[in-house]
Length: 176
Image (tube, rainbow, N blue to C red):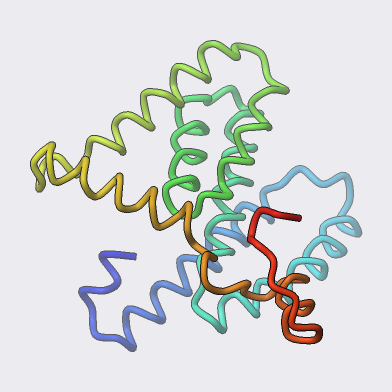
C-alpha cells in the first residue's frame, strides 16, 4: 500500500482498489474452470465478498488474487514466483500462511521449502536498508508482543464477546 499512500487520498484509494479488483478478477478469469457455467457460479460466489472488501478498501481481494495466482504458477511449474507470492501474502496478513499448505500437494517439496525460506529471510532482512539490526530486532520483538496480546483487553467480534456482554462472564482469550 505504501506507493498508494504517497498519492493524494482520492487517487491512492482508487488505484489501491483497482489493483485489488484487477488482480482477483484477472486470476479468477484465468482459472481453469471446466465450463463457463462453473466460472459464472464462482464469479457470483465471490462477487459480494469482493464488493464488500473493495468498499472498505481492504486487502482481501489482493490476498485471494495472490493465492490464486500462486496456484496457477505452481500448476505451470513456476515455483519460485509462486513461493514469492505466498510469502508476500504472509507479510501482508498472517493468515496467508495457510497458502503454504498448497505446496504440500506438489512435487519438489524441498525446493519449494528452500525457495520459501529464501523469500522469508529476504523480506525479514529488507528493512536493514533503512534500520540498524538493533532497531529491527526491537521492532520485530514489539510486533510479536503486539500480535500475541492482540485481544488481551477486547474480545472483538466473537462468541466470548457475546457471552461477556449478555451474561457478564469474564473469560481469558485462550481459555476456550
